[in-house]
Image (cartoon, rainbow, N blue to C red; front, side, top):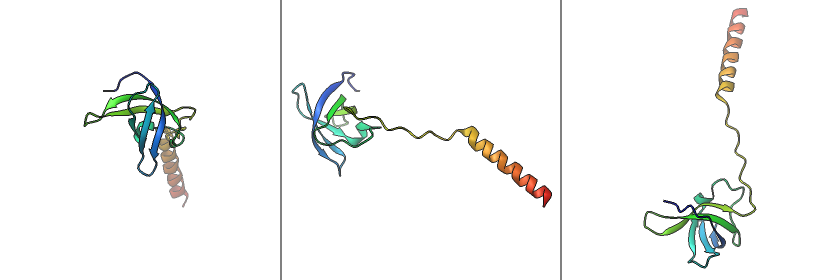
Length: 106
């Protein structure tokens, strides 16, 4: 279970090809593992030297890791709006009406 305390640290190392790195916490604790999946929604991938805000949780092996992380000064990606169901239904109805009209006059 994640600790609700928000911590701050600097990304000390980052292996972009493998999607993980280590944060050096500002409070002087031992470096903490961070995975790209903990940075969901960030507009860019992290780079060494980024300031990160994060919470701490234990992985299945009991080791500490960063979760719910974000990069200071980096916006979240704008999610593309999901197509609304009513638009699909409207397009379907218009298509059926058009086909019926075309069939009637042909």
